[in-house]
Every structure is written in structure tokens, then in C-alpha cells.
Image (cartoon, rainbow, N blue to C red; front, side):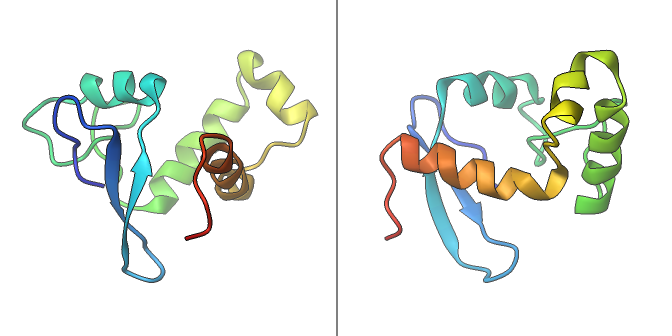
Length: 101
């Protein structure tokens, strides 16, 4: 992902599988997370230690740790899993007006 410029309404993402670039509408709540990352940082997402994830496996490991916490009991109950994030992302994109094209 490339950090969006101030005021941009989309974020540029390079798909891991196809290597194609796509522009995704930027949710206002997500912008708050992006702004938390240091401006000098290439990585937009950091782990609990404040360091960027080295791989998807690092993110997955942290996700599993978070899921064991009490505040995520609902996620466990509703069986929201790491693999389901892709489906949820697609649903959210459709809800904001994106099409398959």
C-alpha cells in the first residue's frame, strides 16, 4: 500500500497474488489508522511493538493473539477468522459503491 496524500479519497494497493495495482476507496475511520503511522515510515501498519510486520504470517500471529483477548469474545463466538477478512473487505467495498470492474 502506498500512503495516500492528504485529502485523497482512495488508497493505492498492489495485489499480492496478481501484482496488479488497484485503487480502493479510503474509509474515514481507516484514515485515522494511517495517520497514526509515522510520516517517515514506509509501512502503514505496525504491530504491538510499534514495528512493521515482516510478512503476512506476522500479522496473522498478532491477529491470533488479539483474538484470545476478552474484548474479542464476540469474534470467536461468531467465528470471524483471519481468512474471512478478504470476504469482509469485499463486502465493505461493495457497500461503498465499488463494482467488480
